[in-house]
Image 1 (cartoon, rainbow, N blue to C red):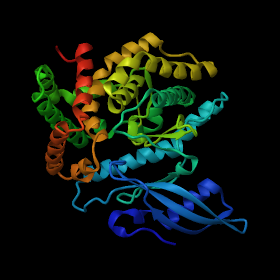
Image 2 (image 1 turned 135 degrees about the vertical axis):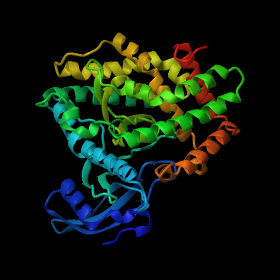
Image 3 (image 1 turned 30 degrees about the vertical axis):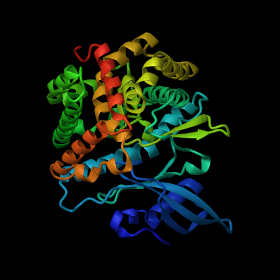
Length: 426
C-alpha cells in the first residue's frame, strides 16, 4: 500500500478510505491490492480544498484489475487556527459529503420514479469526516472523457446550453424530492443546506469583511476608469450592507425555492466532447455550497461568473428559455405542477441581479487569474486574513492594468447591465 507524504495532507487518502470506496463502488466481492495518490490538477483549478487522483489496483474473482477515483481532501490547517475556521472547513466537507452520497441519491430516486434519467453528478462513494482529516472519495470522470473548459475564455452558447438544461433538471428534481419528503422541507431533513455564514456569527462577520475588502478594491479599479464614478460610488455606498443584501437574496420564497447548486461557475463544470470537439455532455461538480433558495440565484451566479458580457446579454432570453423548458419539462413528465411561469422567472431573475453582481465581484478575478495570481485560501482563513486581503488587493489592481485586458471588460459589462437594470444609479 502507498500514500503521499504527510506534508500536504494527501496522506488523508487512507487504506481504510480506499477500501470503503471500493466496496461502495464494486461490491463486497473485491479486495484491495494497492493504491497510490497521483495529482492531475493545476494551480487555479481548485481553491477550497485539495483535489487529487487515486489509482487503485484490486482483485475480483481471481483477476487483478485497475480503477481510479478522485479524492477531495482538506488543506493542512495550522494548529493555532481558530475554532471557527476549523468548524467552517469541517462543515463544508460534511455538507458536500451529504450532498454527494445522500441527497444526490434522493434526487435521482425522485426522477427514476417518473422514468426520468439521473442527474449529471459524479458518484460519491465514501468519506472521512474527522476534524482536520476530512476527505471525500468520488467517481473519476476522466476515463469517460470529461474535462474542464478554459475558464478565462468565458462560456459560449453550446456549453451554456448543456449547463442550463442540467441546472433546470436539478432544480426540478429538488421540487419532486421535497414534495416526497415526510416533512415536505429539505432544510429540516438536511440542516447542512443552511449556509454557515447565516447561522454562525463569526463566519457571518468574516464574510462581511471579505466582501467589503473586495468591493473596495474593485471600487479602486473603477476610480481609474473615466465615466464610472457612479459605479465606484455605488460600490462604496453598498459595501457596508453587503451581507444584508445577500441575506435578503438567499431568503427562501416558496414559489421559486429549489435546491441550488450554489457554486455553479466555470471551474465547477466538466464537459465531454464528440470527435468534432462539440460538447455533448455536462457534469456538475463541487456541491459544498448547495442551499435551498430561489432558482434565480443559480442563474445569476452562473451568468455573472462565467461569461463575457456580449455572450450573456445577447443570449439572455434564449438562455432563460433553455433553462425554463428543461425545468418545466421535467415537472410535466412527472405530472407535477410548475410553480412559476417563464415570465415570472424572468422577473425574479431581474430582482436577483444584485446577487450576481456582488458574487461576480468576488469570482470574476478568480476566473481570470493566471497561476501566479491564484489566491492562497488558507491565508484567508487565518485569524484576521490581513495578509490575504492585502495580497488580493495588489493582485486585482495588477490584473486590471494587465495587457491581456480581460478583467476590466468583464467588470464594465457587468456594471453596465446593472445600470441598465436600475440597480446602480446612472
